[in-house]
Structures are given as structure tokens and as C-alpha cells.
Image 1: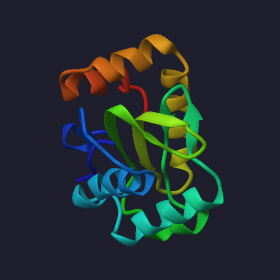
Image 2: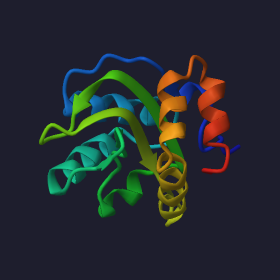
Image 3: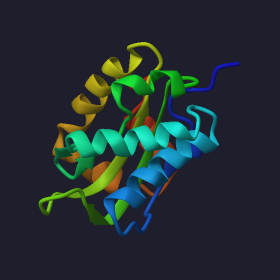
Image 4: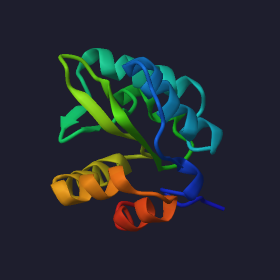
Length: 145
């Protein structure tokens, strides 16, 4: 049976992360642990970051795999990690919200679009950063999947 795109166990709140690589590995590791991707996908996420940053502004980074990582995706899913102190995604760009994305076929495009809509509003960024429960995050992203 297919899992939800965003499950409770895909959300980690108030995590302390020192480096961008650690953040990507942590975010990708959630997707691996919960059966969305294989372990090689995390390496593809790091490769993707070397090509161009996944920092989107507004305290948000959306690490995801390279184009050829599709074979490593078992099913579509996202992970959400909040990092109150922020993690530098290069050039002083501090990401406080990391959303790992794995999309089967071209589903990641819809997911990216929906995440962009949610995170384009400063009020939603504040709600994500101030969330105390996984359910609060799930409610904000209820239309993502």
C-alpha cells in the first residue's frame, strides 16, 4: 500500500544542523528510512546541490535528487525539517526549513509548485518555524501530495 506523500514520521522539528551537507543527508535520510527512496538517492541530492543551490529564499531550501535519480525513487514523498538556528546553504543564505523531495515520474513538479505556493507566504513560513507538532506541519501542506 502506498504511503502518504507527507507522513508524520517524515517531519522533524527543531533540529540542530551544522552544515548544508549534513542538512541534505538528514533530510534525505528521512526519505530513505521511511521507504520513499533508496540510499543512493541521498548522493544524488548532494550532486544536485553541487550543480545549483536548492535554497529558494524565504528561509527555505528544497533539496532533491538529480534528473537521473528517478530510478532511486520508490514512491513520491517529502520530508520537512525545521532548523531554528538555520544552516548556511552558501553565500550566507540561511535555510531554516528543509523540505526533501522525491517524486516518481514527474510528480515532483506538482509538489514543487504546491510547496512554492505554501512557502511564498511569510505567514506560513512563521507557522512552519513555530510549529510544535507534526500535525501543524501536515495541515499546512495538506494540498502538497
